[in-house]
Image 1 (cartoon, helix red, strand yellow):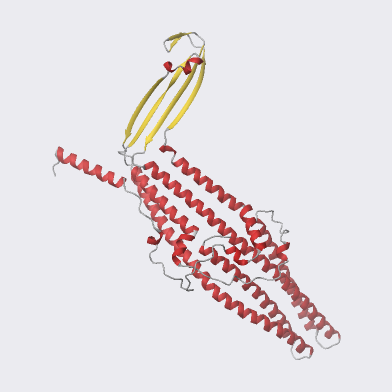
Image 2 (image 1 turned 60 degrees about the vertical axis):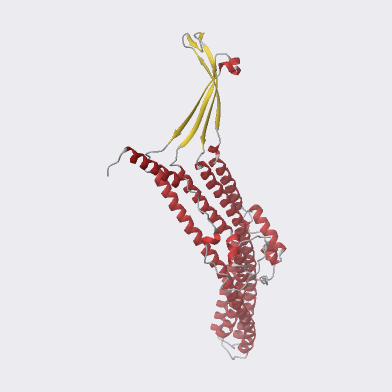
Length: 470
């Protein structure tokens, strides 16, 4: 193909227009509902269109819990670090947009020299003289295409994302504090159950020892009863160790020294409450507007879109305005004399031509990062829906489990009373008697655990839905 001057100019014009069109492309409109078009109209595990309570903490009606959660929100060190990250991100956004404004600097100087005679500013100076300087410089890149603005928008969206993450961290901390609070109550109740079991085992040992002394039973029965008592004491030690572990973890959540000695008000709680009665999940679509991690992930995606826009606009010409000036004099008073000042003004245009593929690779890199952010956002949405569906389903099964274990506790307590009477009459052996005590302890312990799991799951449910605290 033969190129003439007209054809070449036309080709160059088309190439320039193509470059300009691609570089000036605006960021896509990212809408949460559009990205997640396959959202069901209702939750699969519950049919509810009611709006959830925005203040889940007050539904537990526990002033001690409310006070402890507020203490954690005020004193937790991880949360304070997250708050600092918000300030960091805000300042980074300001720094990212600083180049949109003229950059002006001013310097002063003083020089004393012992050189030979010379001429300075048309004046003859001696062998020893001093020079005073007052200079300024100004540089401004005129952001014609919005490249710097796009970078600033990305940093601002990142800052918004970090701010939303901080709100999510508050929700998470409140939930962890409430869950640890109930874990500590359960651990103390487990100790009480184990202590009562040991008292009951001591009665069994005394019963067997009395029968053995009268020759009514074998020495093996006494040894089995003593072994069972020792095992119960070991279980009590394990329960007490669990209390101190949770208590120290709780102290750290509240931002205080982990000595585990400041939880007497929790230790005095003699029962685990039932979860709040009302359980409404609202609509699935509301989750996209409530969950902090979903909002933050969408903001990160939009920030990457802005970075792609900025990278594309880096291909376009940059227009800069520079000026500098000032005065130099041997007399300090002359620095404020406008007649001694000199200045210059220059403007320039820089068009990248060959950068070794750096600019195009930066575009592709940011496009790949945008694709990663998009898929991360979609995956975060799926996990959010999973958490809600999972906690809704778990509520049903945990309630069924709690009901069955409550019945088991009642039956084991009754069977233990029958076992004592039957053993005294010689109708059952020692193993059956000891098994009835172990069954009672295990059933009571399992019932406490599932009661606490119901509370933990309810808190997980509120956390999965997002929203407020109190």
